[in-house]
Length: 218
Image: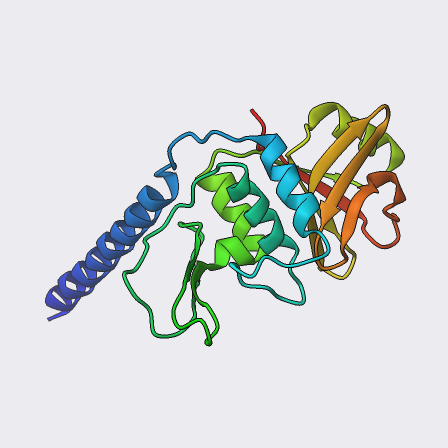
């Protein structure tokens, strides 16, 4: 009786391990399935950023905290193709929680009704954006403390068109696209707190204690 119970218990453990391995393998296959290489026209991305820094493009969703949505739009304007399925029709706006796709499509219907949207959380939410691009897009993300010395290091490692993420002590984040690098200064454009060519050196260490940069320009 004890032997049968031990055999049964061992089979359950083995079955559980096999199921866990299957899901682990499936998940990691999704994660490492990189998106194709992209082309990126930085000039067009910055032109778009300058056009919509203080207004909102009606063909995209818009939020009170709109910073990463705005950055995603700039990347699309720069020619980086979206990564996701386009449904033929949708009946209501839908945001899909995923870090394995990156898209935001609008659907023009009756001109007297609002646009309908189909978007991924990675297009609209900063953490999901970072997760998607660092895992699937091959974009490096480096985080440093917000000090004068580190801002100099950042300046030496970024280009116009790269993305900045500012981290606060209270776990809030803000994102922006680099618009200019002149002499020893980085300038950025962002939504939410609408900033047009704002100097990175003016970002207070007390407000944002860390800075990340994502390398989209190869």
